[in-house]
Length: 148
Image (cartoon, rainbow, N blue to C red):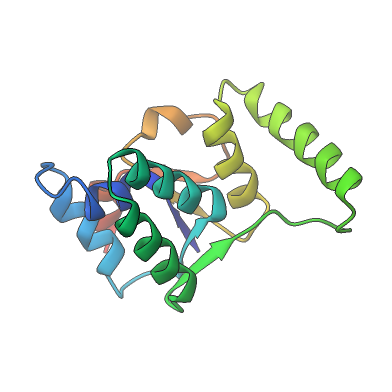
């Protein structure tokens, strides 16, 4: 399974004139390769980008569309128990462990969920945020598409 980072969704939905648009589109629309996923944190981050860009309708539409999309798994944190005290203790421990690798909180949440799933690869334009900070293979859309 590959995990797709927020930047690819943002370019595809908002920044259509970005020179990376076509490759971002290919990653999202490609039916070749491993199962695609993103984390709930990526979707919430995308929602925030849309909303702060003055596009609240797009924010709602994108969130609803991806929640219903059977081609894209939405990964959430995996816990042994759903008790809130345990949840927050585990979350803080897991996130601080990842942040010690030099990862900021937003990216740490994404890595936490991706690493605790069956993900093998993270696709992002912000490769430098994750380079040598995870066991997952980290590729740009261009690198990922060149493998197909």
